Length: 405
Ligand code: PMP
Image (tube, rainbow, N blue to C red; front, side, top):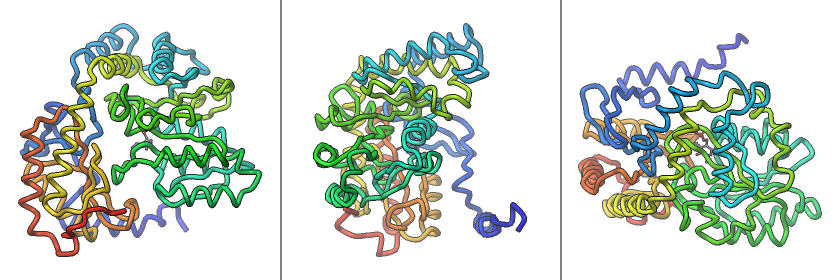
């Protein structure tokens, strides 16, 4: 079979999409006017499909820091830190993140995806076992493949299922790596981290929490779900990204483990890719300062998240199980999902469309992400757009119990 033949089904799907005039996975945003407003074609839209939780992409201090670094250190590093060396700013950011996260070691990667690949894919080799929540992000699954670890999935957010599987492992449970997320990216629900930490304390292994969506969002200081629930001491490694609340690109891993630093020398996704650009690093350093200096951003984010969640649930939409800055609205088939998504754009609201099999439960969903930068009026306009579409939905999508788990 020729290499490209395997895409024939995909080609058919793309052709069918083309005929319907919809292109949900090739959206061109022609202009970004602010953290919350863009232009698609001739239509101005409220951006409710970003992960710009604190709205820092347009923070004047972050932009200035990025511009200054661009002018002083250039457009890119042109190589990996292992081969070409680290810039002072990479090392300074790692020290600042270590202080913020209250962990001894922090390693910065070029994306959050690579941080997962670099840590999980290096720590867990062919003779190791990774127990992961079934809804974990693709980067976590890919990381297990990279390292060749044996993967055991446990039911989403089910600490009792994790416990059963650890018990079955006997002595080997003590060496395995358990991976969960702080806030799950599809439904916006949180891990039952107290229960998981308790199981880990009794039977496990090491615990890694991917706080990509929860750093800056949860916890009194914004360190994530583990901080919010008071279980940081049980978490061996925290994964984070710069691409969400910190408004740039890059990722990091933080740990207290004495040998964490050795990962740099063994982690292929650290060694064999270019390090983050000076502008990116500088804006993240500034964003980290803003995040700490302005806790009111987190309060505003949550006020907006509550408002949108209550508004959509109040309209009878099936949302994720709890208020969150990630608010999923479950729809029916892929066709219904696509039509709904396009209608929202026509009404001036941009959200993300996610189709099965990428969705839990096999249903199409649209995912709204809320920002501290949204005004109350923008949140209300998003709710109004959903209200206008409410009656167009098939009855299956309209249930009074909006909880999906
Ligand atoms: N982990 C989780 C849970 C994510 O949701 C994402 C991105 N959506 C990543 C890792 C990857 O982060 P990045 O975009 O920085 O590569």
